[in-house]
Length: 504
Image (cartoon, rainbow, N blue to C red; front, side, top):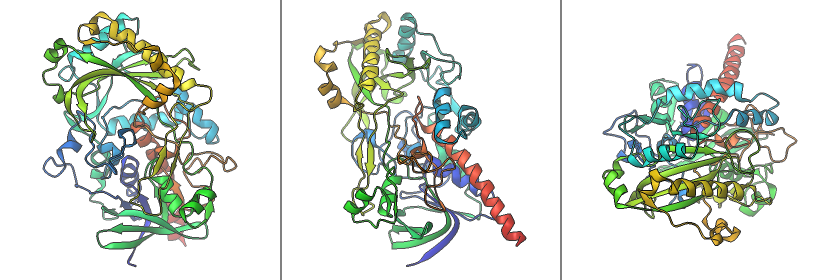
């Protein structure tokens, strides 16, 4: 089997992987390999990059790993889901990041993470929804929210804000989705110590005792071994657990069922999956809305957000997102090319329910087994939060600014019953937590506060799967910030190792 060696091997060229490739290749003494299962279209170029990956107006689906439910979508391309997302750029509440202190020995909190979040906002060229982008539907949403007494949020990401309605910032340059491959990887592409290994599927890690010696990848020319001194996993919340399991790291019972070697049992691998659970209230667009939005397909499908507190809110911050949408309908493949639709989506932003991710088999092409567990928390907290949001959505739909644009068919009582809620449950495309940080004696924890996998010497997790709790926001900016901070910590460690080697 052919071999190639790197000081650092980053597995996964998505949002986190692009950030780490930039940061760790800054030191010319460190050879860095960035492995991506999908294609790499090179530096930003409208002629080379597929139009759907550049179009910031709606989420893309053309590079999905599998054609499954849209709430499980993940992109197989350099830039990863950063190149597929809806370009929303929101931040969690300060309390969200402060809560991470309990899982990190106090080393992660809001004060620590905010500088990295601000840097992510800058690098990704986050901008407001400008007057030319705003649709009549979303203008009416702002007016309706204010009519119901919701404060207008000049900046939905301001740390002092609690509840209200406002325009959502976008990581877009004009109409172009400005994802991490453009923001972070492009400035590093010409460095001689960085190599991008595209169209190479991660099969399994190879180990010698507690050290990973490398990664077996499969490409068009068969399998080969990439050896490394340090391995950083950035395959995402759905991707990291299956790779670890195929490599012999995970819950022992799961490894045995897969037929994988039981090298390093760790019960927390694949556990603690969390996303923002949701339900939708669909409306009936009137002719007035069609007339007001003749070019709906050319508009951002979601531009505004309502942040609200439910009847079971646990602090002073919002625990509901209501996302209004007016756009072409989604077809079976997840493309927005159908007739005009309108509605509100209610999300539980601090959910209790947890799910899991498992490897489907030892075949890396096999889709993971994803059990979200939406609304399965035994106390019914998440269901109450989302239904409170649906109640507020009804109020918004009945308000004068919106009633003239879309008709409302109120929910009957049975739509609120548990069976119906479970049947209609969906998520927010924000999965986190399946390789969560935490102390080594916590069976649910997979990695320490520096991202190092417990029980392994040189394997790190550095993406959304490391988050122990989900922030009350979409997770793109937080993922970038986490990768940035971990990259900084790892770069310092590697620099010290280089110095000791040179001194020796």
